[in-house]
Length: 139
Image (cartoon, rainbow, N blue to C red):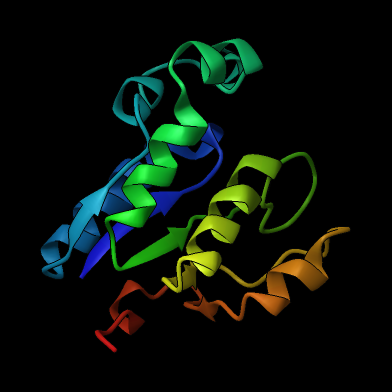
């Protein structure tokens, strides 16, 4: 399966590891642009990478829409951030919505967070993996 990984850039080191694990399971995987680079930065620097300036300069939102369009599924990598368990940020929510509108499969690495837009996430009916990537299967 072709899987696009989505998540906050603060999780870059973990997303790089998830990519390796997915490849070992036989999947073709794409990470957001610059993820490998962000994974090498100090946490404070990686948070700067998610700035509006970087998103505009590199057209990151539109670029990842094209990636999602050409994949079978998205994996929402959601872990604790800003005191919120299994955090899903605004950009990741947008990517999840792209996948939903394009009728792509949506997987969430961890259970859904308790956030203001939980209803919207629930309506997209993601498959919750509970951290087990082996639960990803072809339709």
